[in-house]
Amino acid sequence: MKYAIIKAGGIQYQVSKGQGIDIFHLDKVKDDEIVFDSVLLIKDEDKVIVGQPVVKGAKVKGKVVGQILGDKIRVATYKAKSRYRKVKGHRDQLTRVLIENIDVKE
Image (cartoon, rainbow, N blue to C red; front, side, top):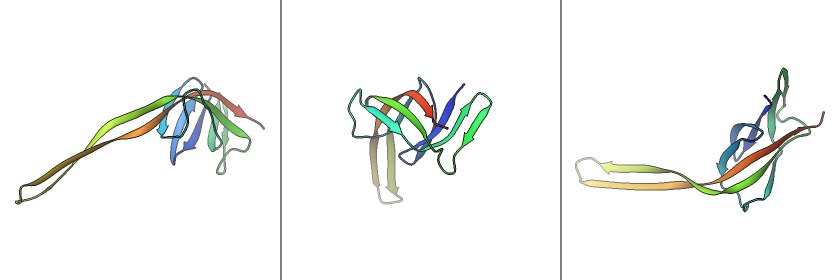
C-alpha cells in the first residue's frame, strides 16, 4: 500500500490515495484542486523515500470536498468561593480534502 506523510497547516498527516482528511480552514471552494508540496516521506511497498526535510519532486494532489465545522470544544472557568462561573465553546472551521494522487519524480 502506497502512502505519504504530508505537512499542512503545521500538522503532519499520513495519507493514501482515496482517503479523506480534515485540515485547518483553507480559502478554497468545493471541487478546487489542491497540491501539497511538503511531502516528508513516501512509502511504496518495500521502498521508502525519506525527505531531508522534504522529498524533492514529490507532490500529493487532492480535491476539496467541502467546508465543515469540527467538534465543539467547551472551556469552563471558575473562581473558587466567589460564585464566578463561565462556560465558553467554539468549533474549528475545517476543510475536507479527498486525496487523489501521490506523485514522485525521481
